[in-house]
Length: 218
Image (cartoon, rainbow, N blue to C red; front, side, top):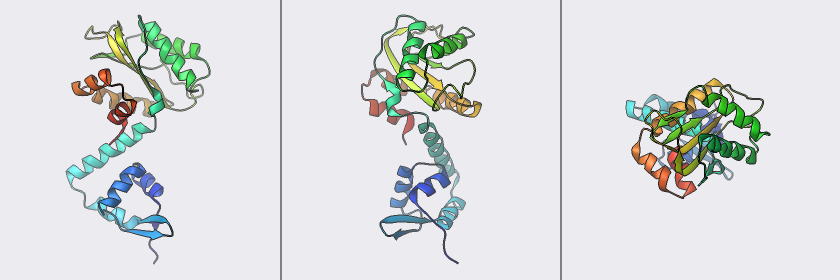
C-alpha cells in the first residue's frame, strides 16, 4: 500500500502549527520525509507514530506551539503601532479605532469607537500592570472584515480606571468573530501580561519585530 504523503503546508494544517515549526521538526529528523521533484513530502504515518510516543513534557510543548500558532492567525506585524498620544481613555480608544479603519478591518472608525466605549462604560477593560484589553460589548462578525488583535502603545499613559490604579500604556484591541476566538485571545494575552519582563519589553522596545516575536512567535 502506498504511503500517504503530505506537503509541508498540509503537515502544518494536520498538526495545527506553522510551516516554520514543520521545518524545524524536519531538521530534527522527527518524521520520515521524501523529496518529490523539488518538494519535500512527509509520511503521515511517521507523524502519527511520533505523536504516539511523545512524553508528557513534549505534549505540553506541542500544545504551546499550537496555542502560539493559533494566536498568529489574529496578530500580524502590521497590527503593531508605536507610539501614539492620548490624554484620556476616550482619546486612546479613538486612536485604536482609527488604526483599525486604516488597516481596513472596519469601514467606520466612529462606529467602532462607539461600541468599544459602550463596553468600557460597563466596566474597565484595564487588567492592571499598565495593560488594557479593549473590545466591543458584543461580537460583530459582519462589521469586522478579518479577526484581528491590534497592539498600540501610549508612552505617557492614561487613566483607565485600572484595578491597580496604574495608568495604561499598553493597549490591545480584540476585533474577533466569535466567542471561541475572543475567549482564547483574552486568556492568551492575560497569561503573557502576567510576566513583568514581557511588560518591560513592550513598554521600552521600538523594534516591531521584537514585539511580534514576543507575542506570537515560538
